Length: 199
Length: 199
Image (cartoon, rainbow over all chains, first blue to last red; front, side, top):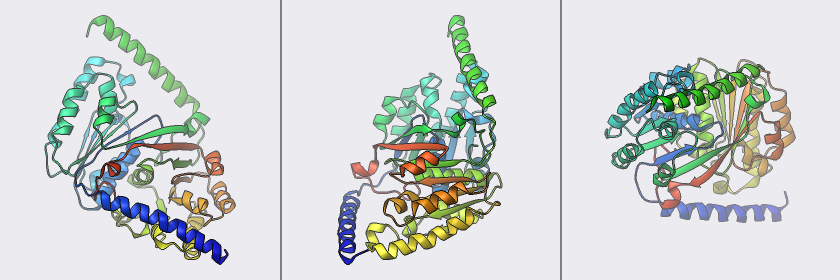
């Protein structure tokens, strides 16, 4: 690279740095973050579990409530439970496998009780409410109750909700919302779900 | 719920189940998956690390190459290194902090050597190439070389590349592509990056 180009690159990067530094200086509110990860793409729950791993890696306390995916063998659960993360898991599996609204509702509400308890517990830094969006869409959980519990949680506690089709009231309340869009998926090309990658 | 509604719900769920079952039956190719997680939203790297946690949780072998984020304290690294995951980390921090194209290029290429080695190693089930997209955008790495290494990797090895603005040739080659869109971010509302959540 010529010296002139090097100078140009340096100037550009300097500007980026100033911009970032300024933004960082302005961001001075200390609080737990409520994040919603929604959309039809792969990586929503996985991202939630990644944040749990991050939290635990700092010696902080995280808890996981899993709606829906109860019947799958789950690699991240093996690792995180060993690292001391409590899991509350809805045991009925995917709802289209049970196909019984009454029992699904009961299971969802029983699972929600753990979430409610943890959402009052100051000692927990992060709660992952995995796949909760479907419980709201299917009316298995009362949205008002979910919102109230999240709003009244300890100030420094962070909460992540994952799942497609997050209700608008959830995304409105959230501090951070990411939408994971499916551009393409190996499954659609006939690739079988791979252990250690997909589950 | 009335009996009629219960029947309706059951029929709907039955249809969903049939659809899913059929798709699962059709997906019978066994291979490692190349995933690209791109877009401007929060959760790309975190999702990659979540998959690493999943892989390790099954007793399988994963490796992480981190471009860019070398100077941050990183909770997930603490946890995953303890679980036996090797990390190759580019030590220069964010590129807008070093602002030197020559040294950045050298650092990127030195880091890439680890990736290249691991992309030949059959014993590794999953490799996370965290933030690699920027190395291609900045021309720190040769795209042809990256693509060749990924194409020629062991058949059952999965690879994840994260970062904004993934090059089209990477997304074309990928089996699975997710785009994480930023809907909103706590940082923009003045919330400071939180330990255990953001880093």
